[in-house]
Image 1: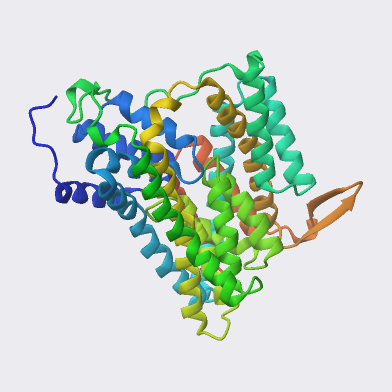
Image 2 (image 1 turned 90 degrees about the horizontal axis):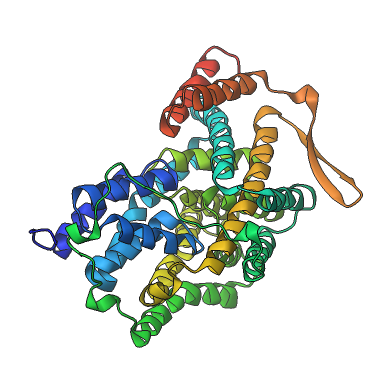
Length: 455
């Protein structure tokens, strides 16, 4: 144990506020940031405990980085600590995305703003392509995983199979494959080393022993879970009961509540599901606008899944139900954020006292590994879908033998967009520039093309 004073809740709040403001770069960057500050600098906890918490969060639906913050906050300062950590992790993103949503709704068609988002689309496409390769290189370790990825791609790309069904099927394949003792499903999970500095649990404030409040306490777990279950679902039930299922606010609450339960595999996999439903089924926004929202989320702090706030904003903005469009959009965005992130607290507080029972569980690890393989196929579909709508001004759908496939209308190839996409791909894969650098560079490129009269 370090000869240092245990941090007060006020001191911990300052640390979590700092993490929230600096949490750029997606889940990988956010997890690395938390490791650097909490493990390497503050020495609140050690490497093994950090990785154990992270592996648990990977088993859950929702943004793993935000849930890791809630878990560590709970570990340090009980329930209130977890709530504060989670809120401060997402609050900067909530404010930033809401402000950008207002700007987009009011001035999105104004020349400079439109040019800026034109450039962001190219960068987002390159970043999604990078995610396919990065996750694929880690997840597709054998033929079975490659087959799962290929099947998931064909299911969503060619047959529009719902994302939740793909994830459920992959999880069951991994689960029963491990139960059957198949070698393809026996590999270990885990993330390996997270940071450059490895800190032993014994040299931290928490030490090797678990605090008393982390011991299994079924009564506490069920009480706090009931509270967050009511906070999550009571507004949803109220909206459906009062406004009816056809109302946009009820649709937002229902759709994103379902999303919160099935969002295994990270933000990019979720975006394929959101794009499929919000763009094609609900008609809340256009494909290009989905890319604009992801560009906002990539360049602001907080989880990438915060892009859903922009989706909810635009859906309510365009179907204001008698309200001012901006007020309706604001309420729609906040409602989306509420039903997306409130369940994260529920998953952590319900499972935290039982976490030791999940340690080294090979069957659950195999299920998660199969889900990750399926996610590779889903993200590949997302990359192709984005690419078609970025590079071409017009895309049409052909239907044959049960397949529904989007194909480009070649005469509508956008040369300016193609040039920016190629530049973004070179920046990401050849020069290995960071996401924020590529996004800012492409945004500047879009503005420059506009000023030159090439858009």
